[in-house]
Length: 225
Image (cartoon, rainbow, N blue to C red):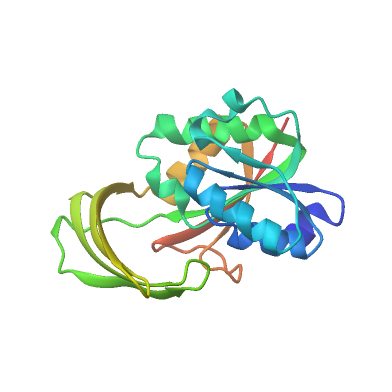
């Protein structure tokens, strides 16, 4: 996608960059890419990774619903919102705020690309499941996460999670509860149109197969300035 929409000279903004997994890969491949995340802790980890890899770029802390308030003067050819981060936008007003902010950051004809949950929830409480088992080499710890979902409505759910973080010398338990949303693909397309975008592709997987229903939907949309 970066090669298709940016070539070698375009600039990319990674919204919700987290600890920089995608951002660093873009930089290593020679792209001009900046990162934005709401979490100062995540950005601190990204900065450490950049330094270790002898890479430099701009990192911004902020909410993707208030991009205009960051005062960015750079224009981008491609903005990505990976990891289904749009699930945390619970209302249409939140989604429109994101899209309009991104629109203002894009060059004429620039592209927004993101994935999201287009499915519907089962109402009620699910059985717990193991949602993550991993080794975090960057922080030298193992992670085990148990999750349980409460389907509040077809398009709103609450995810309760218990996470065990184990290092060589100590362990830590983190309990969290987050609301997540889903939205149908046609409705997401309508919101993009309201913000000035034209959808150029809707895919149902990360290989670019056309979207034909289901939970995973990936959209690319062009800013029609």
